[in-house]
Image (cartoon, rainbow, N blue to C red):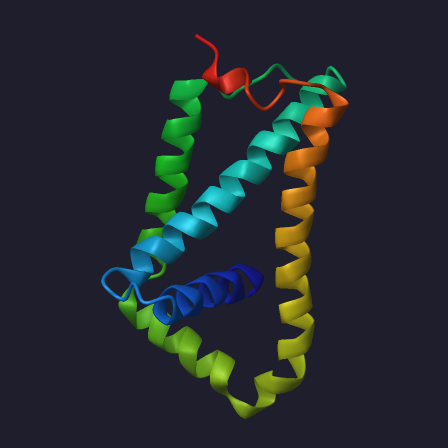
Amino acid sequence: MIFDYFFFKFYKIILKSGIPEFPRFYASLLLGGLINLNLLIFNTLLEKFDRVTYLFDNIIAGISLSLIVAFIFIIYNNSRIEAIKLRFSAEEFQPKKKKLNILFVLYIVLTALAMFLVPLWEPGCLLKMWRG
């Protein structure tokens, strides 16, 4: 349900931004990019603690982003988007809306903080995928 809500929020943001050509694709791209960034940060932290090796070079990072975006795009087809719109506009959903909005903002803020704080902890760790 939380990923449905995140996708729906991105979908609404894209519709309101004035780019209505491909809102489903752009929302899939935003959610997939955010998930891929979190996987990259999590893998970097696990490597810092010597739990796993670094998995994301430039090819694997691009492939994983493409696969995640394609998977999200396939899952959220037009009929599922319409069902999500109905579910999140229903009267019984309104009390949960504030909590989910807080979770959405918290997820974005924590991702942004991790993206900027992890490199301070180990400089250059997020740039490893761009090394040749």
